[in-house]
Amino acid sequence: MGQQVLRSRACPALAQDDSCARPFGERNEEGGHLHLSNPRSEGACHPERRRREGPAFPGKPPVIPVRRLSDVRAAGDLIWFQPALDRLRGLRREADPRLRDFFSSSSPLYIARAPGRLDVMGGIADYSGARVLELPLECSTAVLLQAQDTARCDIATRRGGRWHCFSIELPLGTPAELAARFARRDAERWAAYVLGVVQAVLTRSPRAGGLRILIDSTVPEGRGVASSAALEVAAGAAVAAGCGSPMTATELAAACQTVENHVVGAPCGIMDQMTSACGQRDRLLRLRCQPGTIEGYVAIPEGFRFYGIDSGISHAVAGADYGTVRTAAFMGYRMIAAAAELPAVRDGTRVRIDDPRWGGYLANLTSAEFARLSGALPEEMSGAEFLARYHGLTDTATQVRPDRRYPVRQATEHPIREHERVQRFAELLGVLAEQPGTALELGRLMYQSHKSYGACGLGSDGTDRLVDLVAAEGPEHGLFGAKITGGGSGGTVAILGTSGAEGLVRDVAGRYRAETGREAAVFTTSGPGAAETGVLCLTQLDAS
Image (cartoon, rainbow, N blue to C red; front, side):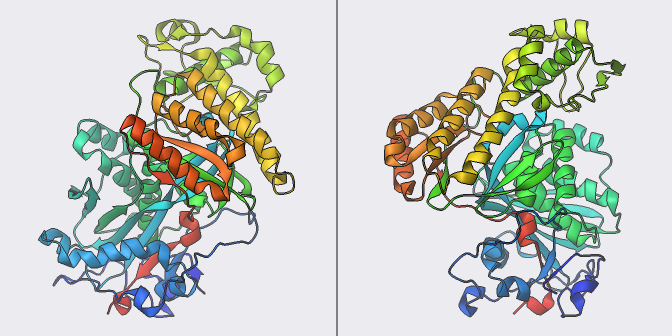
């Protein structure tokens, strides 16, 4: 009975154990706070972080469970919620009365957390249907949520060392209306990630009243470790639990990707949201992005480890940006489909292609097919020329700009080659424990992926330097490979090394910091995904 899916606002599945006993939505109009005893003083947090085993993939999408405090404590999982609980306790010491009185002690409070991720292999190929291998990180974003009677969504978050508050009346309107609102308000753009998810859940399960949401995050922003996905997934899990709208982790990830594409306006693929929702600690999520099929979880062999070093570059000024490269890839798919004589129909500003051959995904082309059809691809093409000849894309998250030049050939080839690299990478990991020498080939695949990013225009001087520093140390010192990650143009470099190479990785980061003057945070530890830890439901009975 420790993990239950929330199926009503009153948490009936949990009420039999006196947790979540009060209906969600009752608010103490006299104010008050949840004063939690410190679980560390009760020996609640086991000193060793438990690694979950079990089947690699249970055969059905994992559900975000709602859990009692007693269950979370007994399972040794309280450590993952501890930063949020500490933040909750600290609210009563805040000088701002809005924060001191933010939550009531008389109605249930839901805490969801979702991790950042290290993109080990796959990266930008996700939007072309490739396989990816992703590791959830220890750093995470927590969202604390409680109902209020007023039909308003109040949000508080701590960013840049200070609190930011935002309020908006409910209902929120359509995703397009939200997108238009935040397109004009850069200072409030962070709220779009949360409100887009709130809108999506409330559309599924309308409810009276409003919500109060507090965000607490240790995921660095703009560093290529999926801070936006962690925020979306944590918010979605908390809102779904609080509104009694059960969602599988895969449903939640898909909803969050839609929010980022069509409310925030970022044309991301789905790997970040899927990793944050469905990832498992110390395992690589093996995901086929067509659109988001979990193929399993790949164990990291004993004696080896993946590390990350932040380059300190949020986005490189030189070179193409992520949106340009994504658009170029879909331009390439459109040209290949035309060369293969697949039927195409104009649909407004888009094109629909009848594609039983590749299912609309570049990653499904074999190397032989690409070699045969790639003659149709120019190195570059202007948006104006493309629109005149091909009329539009199949992609709904990007638009071709007539005045821009696009790196069509490399952006098209990259996901096809990366899909093959990821497949080989997963196979090699499976035999690495018995054949340690395969670490050399794993490293070569990472270096190839890094070079391909650069050829697309998504490299940066900082990430190139970090990769060079790792390569200079080499396998003889326990570092086998490195690559740029995520959307590229800066961000974090992923590294494959031995378990004993952490000191050397930190030394590489220190040398880079001394050379460039940039911060170079190191990521060394994995953490669980949102579905693995679930949503913690606190009630008046949990207060001291």
